[in-house]
Length: 231
Ligand SMILES: [Zn+2]
Image 1 (cartoon, rainbow, N blue to C red):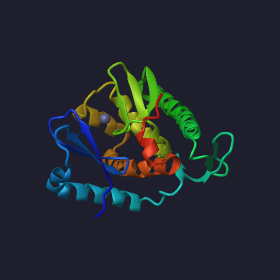
Image 2: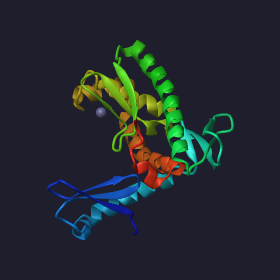
Image 3: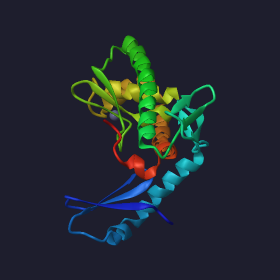
Image 4: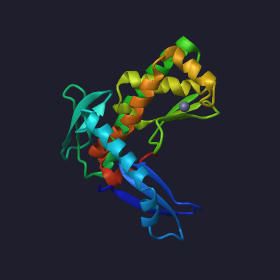
């Protein structure tokens, strides 16, 4: 099994493995040069995880082009003055070689997502009384969303690919963290009031992580997207 991987040396005590951007990231302590020992030792885990990622991608019927709010878009790579997201024709046109275009298309997606998130948050605020002090869209590497003790809800730009009902669930999940910081019984009880089938949704969301990584890779490229784009 050919698994793409990347080695990074950091000031850590023990080697660490994680999958990021559809690639195995091997974090090694500075004195360890050769990753083969940890790869051999964790072989079973690596192959199992990689298998799950492949399965998630194969099971989803859309990993070509891009997806916005669950709707498929084709990507046209063309040199035009600035990127265009056309919801009527379901088409995104941009010059994928241009760093400026890649940044602009990300900004456009952020705007689209922000509008949708405000709509969802306001709906829930009326219904439940949960209201964040601020919503921030970020390109987190490992999570869909988070909630700070200051009441700031951060949500991942990758949410834009998901169907609106799933986005609503993730927003609701973070809003409940405004009251219950941890995933304790009260948290899940509160969540299941609105989403009795939350376990099923959590499972779907887990699979979507890898699919959305692939979609962003289609749009703005692989190595390029590993550079932080947030300002
Ligand atoms: Zn949570």
